[in-house]
Amino acid sequence: QSRFPRPGVEAAATPQSAGWPAPSLVERDLFLLLLRVVEARAAILPVVEDGDIAHPGLRALLGALRSAPDRPAEELMDELPGDAERALLASLLVEEHDLPDVAQQIRDFGRRFEARQRKRELRRATQSVAETQAAGGTSSDDQYKSVHQAAEAVRELTAPRAAGDPGSGPGPRP
Image 1 (cartoon, rainbow, N blue to C red):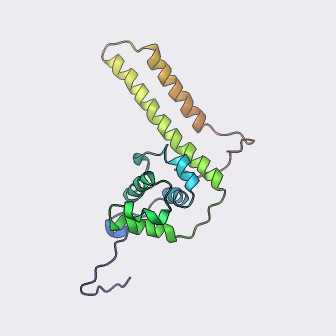
Image 2: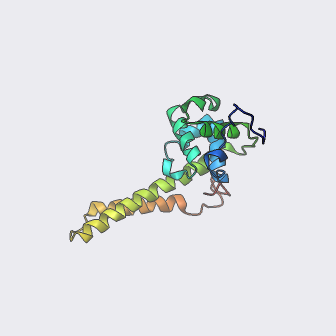
Image 3: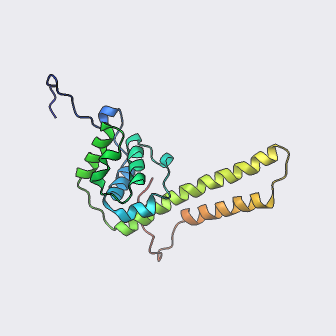
């Protein structure tokens, strides 16, 4: 793209022209995986929420992936709301990036987003107990069970894994 604008020719939109910073490396790696590996979409899309993605352009791309999870990444252009989002998708599609151990990456990202989901459930269950007690009520056994189960699920997902665990080892970090 030329530094010097030509009369009557509009500059192509870029993620930076939308006022967005570059995506974090983790989010970029996640979307490179989702765009290139359809199996990753099936495993990760159900556990990732819009709020898990900080980058606004990638949140739009997440919506496009959800609406057409089986379509090739190149065909998602029509699903995106604007030129900046399409430019972001194009930049991800042309980026050369090796995807080492795809199965492990899918497990790691799935585990990360499942842990976030469980933490939200724990927060809601704890808040419910606190609200009941603040209102002068007594929390039910079901409320305490819900807190305990949510805490146990978070603990299982976030505990360090044993060296013999096939899922152990370094993985992507949030």
